Amino acid sequence: MRIQVIDHPLVSHKLSLLRDEKTPSPVFRQLVDELVTLLAYEATRDVATCEVEVTTPLTTTKARKLALPQPIVVPILRAGLGMLEGMAKLLPSAEIGFLGMKRDEQTLEAITYANRLPEDLSGRQCYVLDPMLATGHTLIASVDYLLERGARDVTCVCIIAAPEGLENFQEAIGNRADVKIVVAAVDDHLNENGYIVPGLGDAGDRLYGVID
Ligand code: URA
Image 1 (cartoon, rainbow, N blue to C red):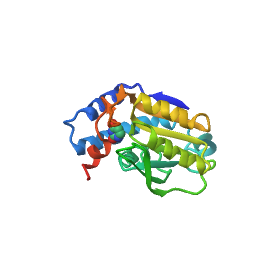
Image 2 (cartoon, rainbow, N blue to C red):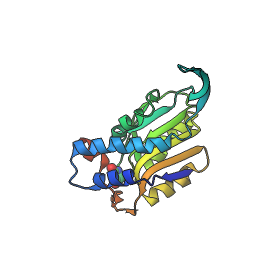
Image 3 (cartoon, helix red, strand yellow):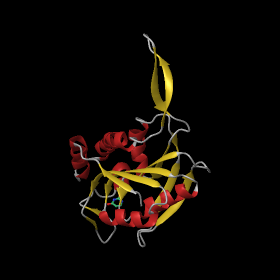
Image 4 (tube, protein in one colour):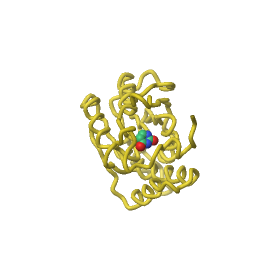
């Protein structure tokens, strides 16, 4: 597993606004969109390309374009949905799959409530979107799911990770596949309710409001 923390002034700036409890939902959504586009630039550094010949107004030349099959982007519902547009801006030809996961607030374990993904993911580059890598249970369950379907090249794009979650993830996924985590920040710790501290609160609630 590889972890890349994106150290960039614009990422830090947008993250500080996201953390602010006074940032209202519409601004929060816009900031997530912009931040994910910045993260996506790094997350797609190893996206597969192939050589093509292009005719310019002056001559023909060799160039590179995205290879087939298209990469697949998998937002983890609900909060990962807020990251989809930011990612799709850089990868408009990607296919989009969906995984619905929520955590049991007592056990903090992940429960799958929806999935829409190709049966066979072998040979596909997968980009999983989940803003908060807290305990890691949701991301572990999601990546496990993709590996079961044959994926071997998975990049997770997160906004904030907790050290405990990264450790759990490393332990659970190990070196079963080439898995990379791209994140804007690794925070201090998880609190007793499984929230990242200092964090930004509940990402789903801040994006979409509180649903009981
Ligand atoms: N999920 C969130 O939205 N925020 C946290 O801090 C932890 C999990």
